Image (cartoon, rainbow, N blue to C red; front, side, top):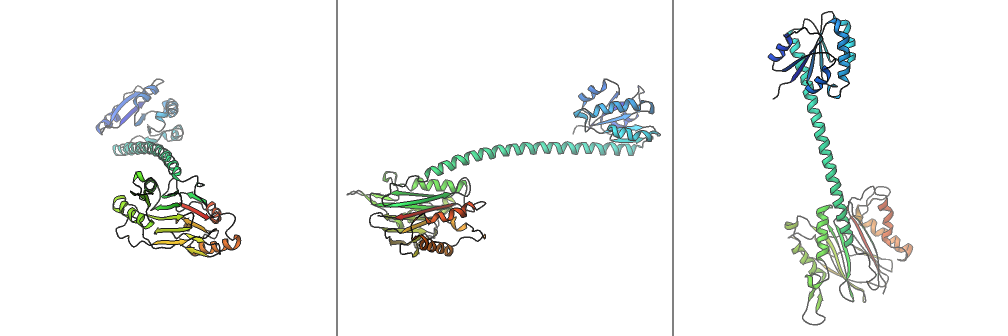
Amino acid sequence: MQAAKILILETSTHNNRLNKDQFRKWGFEVIQRICDDGVLQEVLRMEPQLIFVQTDDENIPKLLDCIKHARLQMKLKETPIVVQLPDKGNTTKEALFSAGVTQCLLEPVSEIELKECINSLLKQVELKNRLEMTRRALEESLHKINRQRAELDHHLTLAAKIQESLIPQNLIQVPFCNFYCHFQPSGKVGGDIYDIFMLDDRHMGLYMVDVMGHGVASSMLAVALSEFLVVDVNRGTPLKRELDEAPYYEIVSPVEVIHYLNKRFSFTKYQHYFTIFYMVFNVETGELRYVRGAHPEPLLMRQDQTVETLNAYGTPIGFEFSQGYEEGILQLQPGDRLLVYSDGLLELEDDMRQPMDYDKLQHMAGEYLADSNGQGRPFAMNFKQMVDHQSRLKDDLTMIEMVWQP
């Protein structure tokens, strides 16, 4: 460890080696100079950890001027300055302290007192230096963190754009069906994903997936699922299979699709599970076949103002114990309205900070049918005001509302 550097300044040419020899005996590096007009620049180059001044009464004015100039230099602003005064120097202490002196010692000074004073001040210098180094290291760390956060935000923004691009934008190609859709992740990216597509000229497919949690990992799996659940038979889709005879394809039943996904996306492999609602709908006859892998129960709002839930049994996708999926079959009537949603809807709170639940949701659906008879603006728009009043969504929110009007 490098010895502390002490500068001894004298206000006269009298060479007093007593303190110089004592400091060296204690293991300090010692430099001795005369306090004159040219010494300040030399002191700045030396960068001592402590300045010790020996003076007499007649040289006090010169010393005060020297100290005041030293304190104006940034490098010497915090350097301890100890002044050793004659035994009658009490009257000059106030002026010295005002000029920037750290400690005044009156002669005679004992060895123990001098050593304790010097060691104490040097320890303070060491602690200040460590604190400054820590502050600088913290500033560098914060700068690095802010830079990494800005880079992460940039990548998350790009990921959000990719995820948004996978959300269907144009649904007019589905015959006899009108849609209202709302997608809002709780962060920049989320674990919800959905798609609506034609399996052939008569059959529409619709799925909604909610991956456990939210954030980058959930979003990546959601994107992977959207790329996997495509209609292209040539890409090995689980939604359709090729046949050797006309029409050369077969639409896979919803329950078979779920069983396949449960094997393909095991929790052991991906460390995530997800819920899913998948349905196949005949747009000409109104027959709806669906399966629900632990996804919230969709609502079916009938034209006769009754409200039903699509509650066929199913467990989350990804677990080995998952089994016993039920495939539900319903017959829609013209004007019937279907609401499919993720559990982010049930996390919404009303003006009284009360969360949504199944009973409240069905009650709202019944009031909607009674007021509008299923006509007018979509039922899902009733939740827009609730969404706008949330300080932050607790979970990703996705809603799809479909009206069949053949």
